[in-house]
Length: 211
Ligand code: FES
Image (cartoon, rainbow, N blue to C red; front, side, top):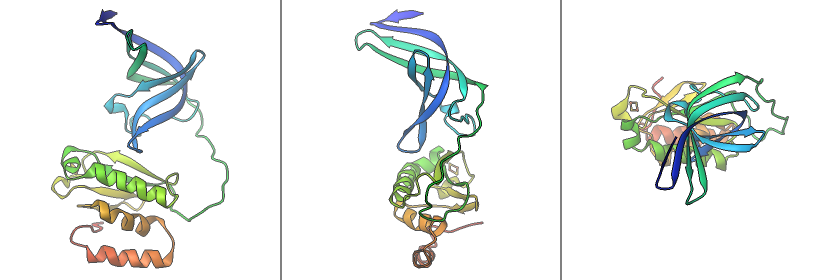
């Protein structure tokens, strides 16, 4: 344990039930919320645990978190940063209540967006925000998930996006083309679909399915 400039830094270990992930920019996992007998805690995730492939949790999973605890005496604030998260007791995935279906969408849909440096330099973060905004506008935010992903090996043609489960890949995606992409894959309105297929073809040198 150390105390410098009114701050105390020490290791911590916490056991509790997973409640939710807190997102940054609407799609990046940044914090983990856990419930314990003493109350709820917000724990910052290390970068390597922010991908759903590395840390997959269901509501109520019992987790043990190891990490660093910083207490600032001046601000009276506590910050917890995880270094390791272990699942002690896994719960089955929560069943979502039946709700009226607004639009027909494909099962387990997600959009992978490369988050490596070449794609980020070419505007991947703006594309993520535009994708999230387009999904929200269409009421699809709970049906289609935007997932950050690693290098897709087309670095000079970024930003790179893959639509799942179709595995349709797009290169050089621009924010103004995102609405057409969403309509093409996730809405069933015939008029909208046809119009957008045509628009995509018109800008085909900048956005096109390669598989
Ligand atoms: S950096 Fe995005 S594909 Fe390689």
